[in-house]
Each structure stands twice: as structure tokens, then as C-alpha cells.
Image 1 (cartoon, rainbow, N blue to C red):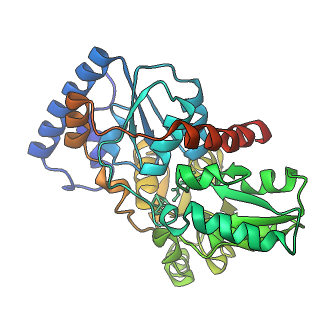
Image 2 (tube, rainbow, N blue to C red):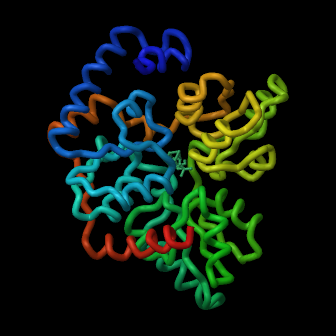
Length: 326
Ligand code: 13P
Ligand code: SF4
């Protein structure tokens, strides 16, 4: 018999989930399994989701892996446990599937930082001085913004894709921190958009320095949405799945995980023989997705992601170009 949900959740700390809550979760999870079977649904989940969601996920990953997975899924229904822009990406890559997001309010401070109209205007203005300008959109953007971009990137491949482009000048949006990281690792002229992830941008060097003082042997793993002064303290700068692989494969026994707290939870559950210290914040949007809402979503087959054919076709070009270049 595998590890029970109760046992897994107890790895996050004693008393966080009481027996009654676990029993309720188990009932809902069983219902979700039955409903998935009934509707031929596939459930995709981002690494920052609540640990109980992973119990019913067919695939858990970072943005790049989830986009790759969505591109190969052929299911009438996809339930996306993550945030709105990620579910949109799944819809763009699987237009014939019904893509459900358990809470449509699960947004993202980065995706909200850029509108298609503002990007179009800025790009037109910059092209007067830099005619070869390419608009590179982090995947954390709306479908409409992707539709007016040249290529999309994720945290796992941003440097590689920017360096692979023939263009010398890049309007990089919407994350100024990821833009600064790309600029440091590229000879190109990077013009940043002024957005940030409210979860990562709030993390400061003192949060890491204090923990590192207490655990000097720990490797510091940092997500590239963090500020440059935080990235400077990293042993490795990685996407969320990159952090999981690093922790599993490294000889080190201890890690300071500098990103959204869901990732350290996943590591504590899945790599129980190593130690993980949290220098993290919670993403209120990721945590809007709950097991009861996921069950209700499968009962009602709603709420559903809806996008116009025109936006989907234009956005798909930028995501497909990314998948080819990566
Ligand atoms: P990853 O692609 O690294 O999973 O990051 C997504 C995200 O939203 C980070 O805040
Ligand atoms: Fe968006 Fe930041 Fe939440 Fe990721 S952690 S979904 S970038 S607000």
C-alpha cells in the first residue's frame, strides 16, 4: 500500500490538518476520481497547488511542462488546477477540449501588469528606434498579450529562447526581475516591462541570509522572478520543476527554497529524506483552487475558459514557436 494522504500531509508539520479535515478531503478526492472517469477528464496541476490536489492530478509540473503536456493531451475535458493564464495556455493548445478552471478569480499579478493594447503601443513606439525589436512574453501573460507577441518564454527557457532569436533588441514582458536575469545572461538589448510577481518581489536578501546563517550547508534555490539582490545569493536559479530535479539529484541534504511556499511543501512530501527550509510567500491566487471547488467544477462542468478563435490562433503561434525553440 502506498503512503496515505494523512501521512503525506503530516510531513508538512504535526497538526496542520486534523483527522476530520483529512477524512473530508478523502471523500471529495474519491468523488473527483469518479467524476474524472465519467467525463474522460484529465487533471493538470501546477507545482504551487495545495498538496491534496496532487492526489488526483494526472500530471503536476512547471509552466513549460504543463504547456508541453497540454499540447499532447487529447481529452474532452481538462481540469486545470493552477491560475487563469495557465488554463488559457491549455485551452490555446487544446482548443477542442473543454478547459475548466475551478475558480476564475485565480489570476496573477504578472499577467495583470500588461494589456494587449499597452504592449502594442509600446512596441510601435520602440520600433521607431529599434526596427528589429522582438516582443518576448513570459508565459505569465493573458492570451491577448501572447497574441500580440513574437514568442513566449517560461522561467525554464527564457535565456535560451532570447539568445536563440535573430533579433538584437527585445521588449521583455511583463516581469522586470526575469528581464534583469535574462539581460545578465545575454548580450542582447533587453527593454523590461515594469511588472512583477507580488509573491517573489517581496522576498528580500535578509529572508535568505538569516536562514543561511542557521543552516550554512544548505543550498539556496531561487526562482528567477526574485529581485537581482536575492538572485545574487543563489546556488542555483531554477524554474519550480528545476528546483525539484536539483533537490532530488544533488548530493546536498539541505536546501533553502526561495519561491512560493507550495513548492517547499511538495519537496517536503516527495523528498522526505532531505531537509527543506522555507524562505517563501504564499500566492493567494494559486491557493484559490481547493478540493471542494474542483469537485463542484467536475459536477457542473463549469467554470470554463472561453477565448475567441482569433486570439487562440495568434497566441498559439507564440507558444508553438517557444516549444520549437526550447
Ligand atoms: P514556473 O514556470 O517556474 O513553474 O513558474 C510559474 C510561476 O507562476 C512562478 O511564480
Ligand atoms: Fe503569478 Fe506570482 Fe502567483 Fe506565480 S506566484 S501565479 S507569478 S502571482
